[in-house]
Image: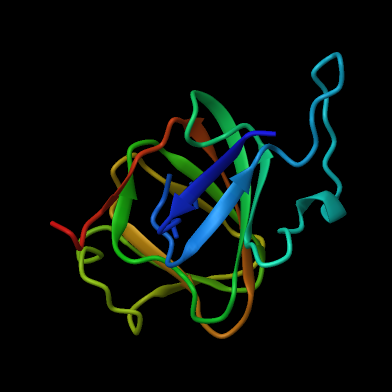
Length: 155
């Protein structure tokens, strides 16, 4: 099984910039002999003490990936951007985001709420940050790897 340690995981990946550390283990369900796979909801629960599940592929390698990340209340990322576009669906809870001009400066009081079931497209190099404010939030992130995440606050 392929194991990748990501510190300051987007705070996700995502080769990403999350607050904290996480471990990415190979995708939750290996494909069958013909390449098909089905991951049930119980397969996509983060391991004890983790918050990220690699559903398909790997964001640090070439190719398509799908990842689910669960954030506890108050957890999220600081201003950053990714080298590749990302497609995000809010699976559970209300996610908060700041994006575009002005999102280079962290201001958690001025974020846009994104309700459960909503789809988000983040363009390559699009500046943003995100967080779960008052409740646990699960997001599903898809894209094409490899993804490089760059922090804006270290500039």
